[in-house]
Image (cartoon, rainbow, N blue to C red):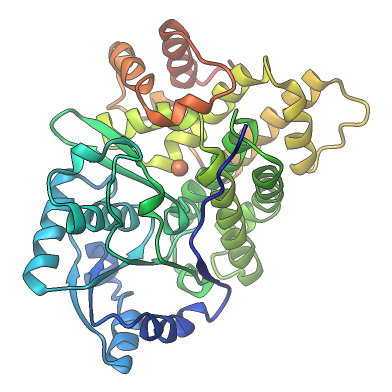
Length: 389
Ligand SMILES: [Fe+2]
């Protein structure tokens, strides 16, 4: 069987990376950017000033769409697309975490295709290239700055749509840890656990290859070693830098190997209740992986080793249990709530609907075991109660 490997052609990473971005934008010959970001970054923190100063310096024009919110919606994609057309922009710069990058991909799709973003739900529904996108990342988690995935919430259906298409891959990704030092501890924790979920889901995916495995295992090792430090002290520069590499490596893994039922189920919690993506993943992760460990226990021996566990005297199932315990311990250490019951909005009577939608999510296709609906409901219930599955 043949496998595909996807990632942007050019990726700038490491401290000082933003300063190099202007030169690359000039080399690409663009005239006017639509900057896609969120209001807290643009209006309150004024974090976008480093970018607008850079564009002023190189004589590239810009308009700003700062209406993106966590779990970006079809309406936000439409509003950004209208502004892009009104302003005559010829490329897009997303600035922020996963939400601005995802919204920017949606805008980039509609800029060249027209129509309705709902038409592009699923795998490879695009017929033309997307408008070029420079994705400047300010969190260490989603990896949307370098992936072919865009997650947009359809408000009418309360569903998070997965748009998976290689044509949504950004032209240029920028991961500069200097932009991440002011990220609050709770966001550092949630996005870091998202990165860990990407790496683990990609590693146990049915589409994993030796190429994605190598990225996934090193990502797991880096998250295990540096996430708690980055949460404890946001200005721990080494921890911030290593988490940047961790999230990028995890992105390299899942962008080609895809994900599994943690994401398929987390997307429904995000779409239905507007809960933070990384937190939903972190809560679901040990439950879904306990389910997966039944069929691929040997994969969990390597995950345990990457998490620093000495597995020499353990059976495969003991190693798997140790890996799951290490995930739970890291989650608790960085302050993730223990279960879904911690959120008042989550109601067990919704789990049937959530399970139906999770089973339609494109991310579940590569889970190592395909669950029946009653098993998906049982996983939601286990995550609700906070019991080990
Ligand atoms: Fe994710």
